[in-house]
Length: 367
Image 1 (cartoon, rainbow, N blue to C red):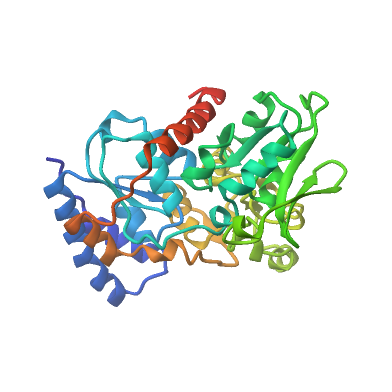
Image 2: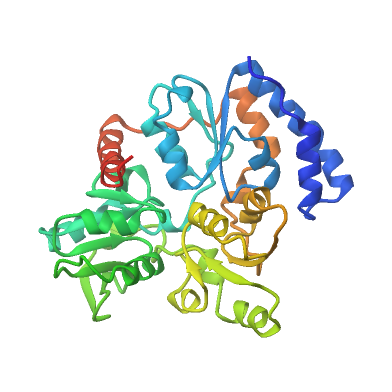
């Protein structure tokens, strides 16, 4: 059995975030002690995304972005153990697919994702029918069903590499639209004379794709009964950021550098110094110790791993929170440990196809 976690140290770290009062931490600490006790009793593993609330990140066994969570699925450490996936649902599915011998549970099944809700299998299949020579690259923020019918999956950490190494013409990126535009803009060489199309939205009963070089739209009819849950696959958090959120910081000169996630709009991406996923943000700051005051444009709770990695630096953000990620909390996390609910299952045929796409991603990026 593993050693008990130093919960008092977590309390000190929470206080240093300046997000919780001492009274709030006094309520949080007993909950963390109970979660740690239950985890040890069941030899369970808690996996959390960087956008979870700080107490969950600090009590978790593994914390990371989507790629890190995918890589963890190949870790023999997890084999056959109870996994609490304190993430959104598509991530829990991914962990289950890559670690089929484990029981995977998620604290709240309503922890979804607006990007994932903006794409479905019917839409992918209609795109495939219209572009039979294409390679379809799905952002990892998609359901297991969608992953099962595309050619490969990518994350914010490896999209450039995946796109460059894929065959097919055109390369079609699904969803999200902002992510696709920001990623393809970075690919200035090795384009092999191909077209790059991005899924934009469902409009007037049509699938709308955009040629990312000409900005010309191309449409495909879609039956009304086959529509995705949401008409466009963009992030409800990142699309709320605007250049105005950045201008005041620049005007006042209070930050040394500005970093942003590639799910922000291209207009926002134009205003920052570095665009990259969560692990790339940390790596970038590690490579640049001269940056002492950092403005980050992504989900607000990214502050927790940034401050954990660089406690001597100051971090600023026009704070935006993900309502989906907030579905998970300490109370339902404890319930997941006690009652082992809610279990995440994936149909074997879907799991096979999705695993193929995920394995292809790892192969193309050398993992």
